[in-house]
Image 1 (cartoon, rainbow, N blue to C red):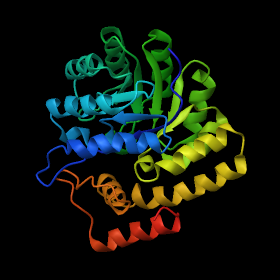
Image 2 (cartoon, rainbow, N blue to C red):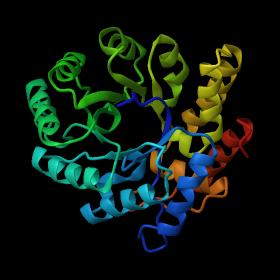
Image 3 (tube, rainbow, N blue to C red):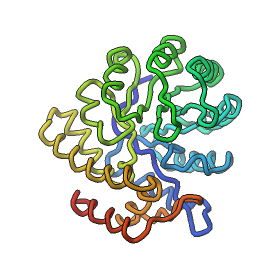
Length: 295
């Protein structure tokens, strides 16, 4: 299968006033992101509020996205659970729906050792009939998956095809590229290292700001691929401004949904216990989006 490349949006899960999945808006979002020029979608990532969704809701989100996305657009589905058994159950169901690959983070309650992480992912790869991308997201899991473990997994099983690395650590991403870059998909997981990671050899990105400014993310990728580094640099700096405020300063999901609302996307509020932002925070987001030229 071809390597996954480009900028993917880890899209939000829109809710109505009763915290139910807003299915018509989710359908609209799929077309919104594709029309903006993004290369694919990631459902049930952190920004999709996957820990707050039931098993049935997770399947419904992916079912809707697959229903709306053209066949040429890859859809990666998140399958992160706290036990290997439940991860297998969800992963099988998502692959049966037609997901092109699975994005699987480490168990995040009891913190597994490196050997436990290796055993977890190796069993998943052996029992799931589909491509797996490892999701390294220490911001939320409190766990940085060792590069040695990732390298061992890539060598051990062909189903483990890549990683979304959200560590924002360029030294770590550089080492992943050095060890695995010619045979393993490496995707930046934070917007502030997109361009720099691509220069060193990463293959794309899965970034929260693609929810808010998908057209700039797509333009950045195209500029990079065309070798227009001056334009790519300018676009990266614009995205950094949005990222600093929308992703880093406040509750990430609350801020992203608020910013999307300001851009005319009726994605609703985050699911409790996350709360909507106060007026001061909203004004800070509005100012950042205006300065970055997306409002």
